[in-house]
Length: 116
Image 1 (cartoon, rainbow, N blue to C red):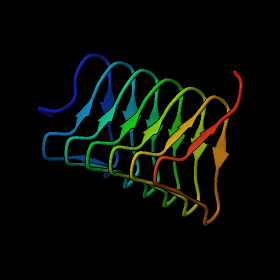
Image 2 (image 1 turned 45 degrees about the vertical axis):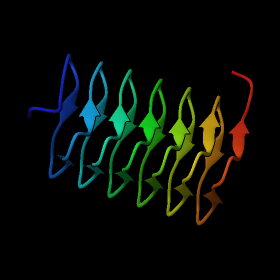
Image 3 (image 1 turned 90 degrees about the vertical axis):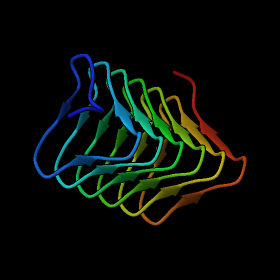
C-alpha cells in the first residue's frame, strides 16, 4: 500500500485511502477505514468498523474500535480508547488514559484527558 510506511500494518478488509497515512508500528484491521489526510501512527490501533477521516490523528498507544469515528482535526493520543459508536470530531482531543465509549460525542474544542 502506498500510504503505509515503516512497520505499520493494514490487514483484513481494512482500507487506507486518499492521502491518509499509517506509519510507525500502527495497525489498521478488520473493516476499519482511514481516509482523507488522516494519520494513524506510533503504536496506535484502529479496528472493527472504526473510521478515521479528514485531518484526524490517532497516535501513541491509542485504540479506536467498534463503530467509532474520529474526524475533522480531532486527535486521539496516549493510551486513550474510543469505542462503541463514539464520535470524536472537530478540534476535539482525547488523551492520556481517557475512555470515550458507547454513544458519546466529543466535539468542538473539547478536551478529554487523564494523567498518564
